[in-house]
Image (cartoon, rainbow, N blue to C red):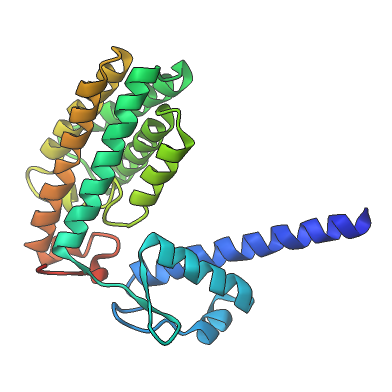
Length: 254
């Protein structure tokens, strides 16, 4: 029994080390410490991350699956660069999958507990938007509430498959629901765009509760268009683009 327990602890430790390596490596990529096209140095990462070689290799494979890395023909990995059209497509995929999740939630009936939690998120956003202007702290709070709302929406579908695919689509920093929110943290219309997004949040939730599947799906796909608009604005404003997580990975053009 003691041997089994030790084996279990070892497996848990390996999993913990892999998660640590994956999160830290993602931070290095998104933060620009590893440049697009740069070969990822596996041995150097072992020392830099403070974990063994196996968790690093597993983390690299996971980030390849997420789409943040490219596999090199001769072995190893390089940081992936994303064209403007690829970022656009990633947002479109996320919007399409979230639309599916909203439709399934409406058709199948979302659990009351999830609906209540989503309403609480909207109440939190309403409180933030009650102010005539938003400061950095308010934008950070919006990001938290917004991310929570989208997570709850994926859960409402009642499908582990759909939820997993939504999470995977949103794994790209710039394809996530909050990918381009911070682009809007400056400028005279900063609050206005969030007000529109909040109205869409409320409309989607109303459609789900009314069991209107087609309407819920349409509204959620339309909601993703805000991210498309923010992408275009970010690419036209270098200062705004620097506020986007993973901006160093994006290049103009197709």
